[in-house]
Amino acid sequence: MCGIFGIVVEQEQPLGEILVQAGKRLSYRGYDSVGCATLHEDGSIDLRKDVGKVDEVAERLRFFEMTGRRGMVQLRWATFGTPSQVNAQPHFDSDGDLVGAHNGNVVNNVELRQQFIAQGMTVRSTNDGESCVHAVERYVDQGYDMVGAIRRACHDLEGDYAFVIGRVGEDRLYALKKGSGLVVGLGEGSSCVSSDLPSILPFTRRILRVQDGEIVVLWADRVELRRVEDGGVIEREVETVAESMEVAEKGGYPHFMLKEIHEQPGVVRELLNLFEASAHVAPMVERMAKARHLYLVGCGTSYHACMLGSVYMARLAGRAAIPILAPQFIAQYGPALGEDDVGLFVSQSGETKDVLNALEVAQERGTHVLGLVNVLGSTLMNVSECYLPLACGYEISVPATKTFTNQVVAFLYLALRMGGRDTAILARLPGLLEETLDLIEPQAAALEANLADRDDLYCLGYGLTYPIALEGALKLKEVTYAHCEGMLSTEFKHGPLSAVHQGYPVIFVAGPEDVPLIVSGVNETTCRGGWAIAIGEEDDRLRNNAHDLIRLPEAGPLLSPILATLPLQVLSYRLSLARGYDPDFPRNLSKTLTVD
Ligand code: M6R
Image (cartoon, rainbow, N blue to C red):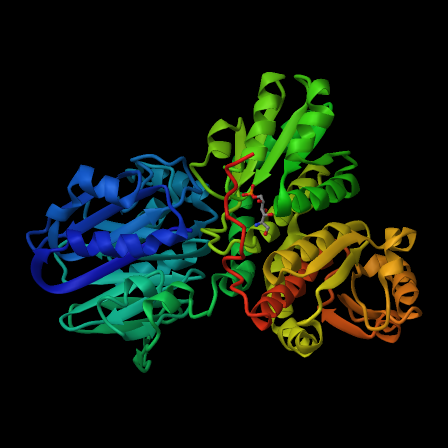
């Protein structure tokens, strides 16, 4: 999740400090490299960038000395191209007349780079941010003005992204939004543009929210919005924002957990774009397909993703994959591991000690080690033979939400690829997640009052929804401090059914294919006075047998479990607040467990 910030001021002045501070405010999004460019009135551009943290790179490259009338800073989270100085942003065009930086993914980056090279342009990196600059350069060279060139470039650049760009000899910056966030700030004698609000608030509270398909032209004393479609000027009221910096960092949500729940459609979209264009997916699939034994290793939420991944792999690729909790992996399979085996280690943080211990054992036995990890630069990323990023940006709340969803989506994608199947079914997922979030909020609110004081409940699922039931139970436990046990629905009658009494809450997560089996479990509960809450697609059998149905959009058996995660997250969040707790920082827990 890269971040961009650009500023235009009235006269040449020191800009380095401003850019460094803006960069720091963008840093919560996650990044591996940082760069600044300032444009001077004499037509020169000062560009400094490298891999590392803002403070360290700023010190080393002396960002504080940078002056200019226009400046930009970019924090890069590597997707296309490894983290390196040359891939760090901003980027020049061929002649150094344009400089620009982007946020997001240009999915046809490889094809575009080939075109630019064939057209004689100087392409220095493999980063898609550079493609944004060359895409504009191509039309500037044909005689278009900057707005005309950006409009045409927008049609060539596929994917979800935003960029900021400046040209020597001018007094303005330009920005384009197509999928990624972009906000404009109108200050006294300056205007700025950024991926998000926190980096703008120190300058001004007067903002314009840019929409997809819009270009912004920024001067020191005014801004102009134009449509990509026809170049026409857009009139938009300036908004004055009242929110505090803290609320702004939470994207306007009261808690990071809720913000991160609502980020899920966006991060899924980003991950799918990334995988479609990634050169790492094919070798990873090949390595897993050839394994003698394939182990999916993780802890907590990441382990639940492994469990669902295993079901997807068997079902879509006919491949048995063994999901296993990391410490148990050592005890149960350590002595049997061999050089033909593959361990796919899954971790949001990439630093969980239990996972790294298991990985060490695998390496000692010569087993191939692959990674699925969110935090880039983490130990798991560094020691894996090959890794795929989860592309979620920072997940700040202790309860994992968006990273679970992207772990599961990654598994589904890999399973489809391993089975030689079309991944196109995933294209519907971001939209379905948005629809689900709209649908479930009032449904969860309706259940809240009755559930808030329960200290004991069950969450059951079957087949593809079994891991979702475990994950839902973990989330409920983690943030409400109530005891919620997750279980295979068919196991309930083998013992725990004895806990059921009048009004005892049992949540059933029903995949569309498993409704009859789930309905049996529902009836075993209701006939003993229990309160059955079903989560599933609209179905008369669920509606008529359970007391409540949290309805999901129709998505089919493969996608429905992913959607079913959302009501359990939202319910956990609401119940945590109703019980007076802070869902972002539950007691006794830590985001990254670096202890045994
Ligand atoms: O960073 P990891 O994915 O390796 O963390 C593993 C677990 O500690 C983590 O998933 C934990 O269970 C979550 N906080 C649950 O929401």
